[in-house]
Length: 538
Ligand code: OOB
Image 1 (cartoon, protein in one colour):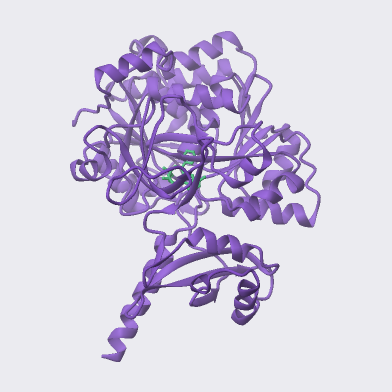
Image 2: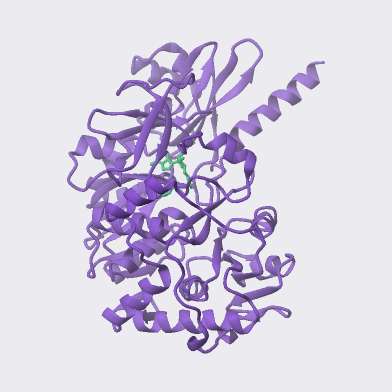
């Protein structure tokens, strides 16, 4: 088995410890301590079932001991693919308690991704559930080359029902080294298959402890997981783990649709939740049609992809709570707008880093520092940002500098206040005959049109211009005419080259596993069309 590691040079580790970021906390100890401190408070609910901290800890420890009884060993990797169901938590904290390493897959992942994750992590087991949204995950688990397939709920033949995996907690090993790898998170993966991200107990617990403080979480808070629980945003920013750290309550939302989420928020008194921009638009639209009455809600976080100012300004009036923008990555660095930032900062920036020791470099393509206010490539290094992916030498050579900075692939502007404004991915920019067009800029303009629900602008290869711009628009109702959109843009007095060369109307956008719009799929589709067209001409 390839050993797992994640380490920082000694001088950095010493500094992160001295400054109180790394405190030697571990996940098994965290849940045990909370269960001792508030045994009867509710830790997890799906609106029906309610598990107290004591019960969750108990279930986790028995499950962990059950894994040992199956013959799994501390250090083994266990793939977890589950939706937003309570069983996710005893599964993951049970794996921690047994000294094993969870590897998180998202429910939207299919054979290609899951088999890749199982193989690169050398997973010895998978914990999954029968079906999520009609797809047979248990069947997928059984078709993988893993020794044990454990299923929560309906269990097909050949798999092990999760409730039968139970053992004596006295057999559990001692707590792990806080500097050891706690789990493998997966990269957002805008290109290719997801990479494995080894995160340590110390570094991850620092990020969620500080995130919980930034969001003002305490024992009275109620965090709702609306996005998939296995995603880094939902897990730690402050997410379900940050909520458990604070002794708060976690509510699991089975579907992000407003007709499911809004009643659950009202019933459970949810105070904070996180969304990706396409979902935020859906919630805003629903709230516009009918007052949602979400009086308990204090914070809606939006992150994972750029939330444009035009939409951001609608959140507080329509949902009646504070907006918080979150710009993070599973590799580490997370930025938040603070709750007391002025409104223009909250709607117009993606926040600033968690830590004083998050080092930020903004470089031009030649590697020179760019001044504040100018866009450049974001590189970062810090107390919870990894120094390497697992078993990926060529990705590591590309993604990290020699002195340990992670190249995020994001283009950002830094304001003098330290707030970052994301301009897009390095490859979202459209280079139209040398004129650089920011997809985000044009999208923000398009969103101002009364008939536009959402818009994405991507490049199309063009033999004359190099690239030209195509706008995909999801209309609110009947699509307007492309000429109306162009006229509207001219009325906003923007450079002519920013008016999209092509405008197409769509019902829906292709999305990634966590629900971000997949620009890559849109770009690939256009490129294929161009290639087919060229072939036809020849
Ligand atoms: C989060 O994590 P990942 O690993 O799925 O994706 C990271 C990438 C970033 O490099 C950036 O390109 C994009 O997603 N991104 C944003 C953004 N938040 C993430 N781009 C623009 N604006 C934002 N607010 O997506 C993630 C992890 C933790 C917290 C929040 C999001």
